[in-house]
Length: 339
Image (tube, rainbow, N blue to C red; front, top):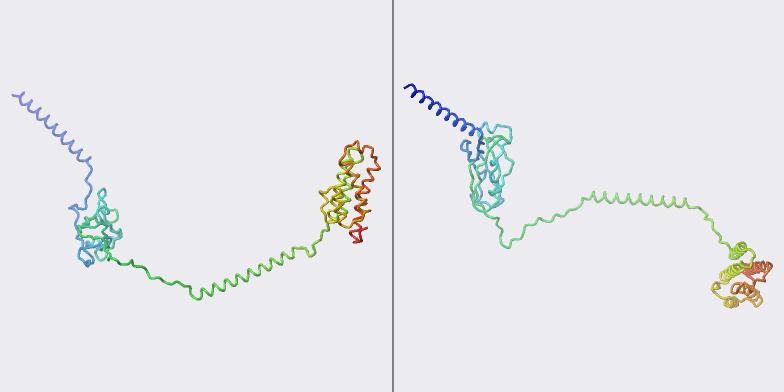
């Protein structure tokens, strides 16, 4: 009998332990499970009826984009709170835009009445869902009722012209025109004075008498070149050729400038003919021709033809060249008749 009682007690103890374990698991699961998100339709929140501040001309018929002023009546203690009151939907669900509504975030509390503005953005029957009413981001203390309307697209009369703003003529007052004229006159006067001062300074910077650089006379240049030729090529048979070429070029250049002829590229005969046209007599032409014959002999022949020339002949070429330059220099400067 005792054994039977003992076994019965053991069985009861095991069942109690099992029940306690199951109950503990249920408590832990309930504690770990997240609480459901609040809903605007939560029956625990008091519902405040939405009223239209001003009825539309067509009752509950509105057009898309119309601004509709709505209001709800708050309790006295709720309207006395200094924090801003906000409206919104629970997070995680569809937005107001998705449901066809735009909610102006600015609200107004006046004499226990909360006013806000909504606009329909879709066409057809629309229902504004129940909205949370809270202080800022705090916990909601109430909710609004739903609000239903019929929305149509904006209408325009066929053939109606778009409304244009009237053209407004814009003009400056007389005092501004006068001020502009006076300012322009002053700036013009100042600019003219600065320009006159600049011209005076430039005139002072320039010398009163600009020195005139007198170019060297042609005969002086020719004599200097002849001296340079003979200084560069002292007497020797090989130096006779560059001396002859040099004297010939200097004399032709001198004749070209003095008589305004093109003798630089002319042969001896062509040059003599050009000088004859300038009224040079036979004796003068003969003197020039004899000198150029001596120079051409050296210029256009080999050394065998003039290797017998002595230093006296070398110096004679220099003297004759200088005398011809001096002779025609004197005649041109004195404007005398050509001999």
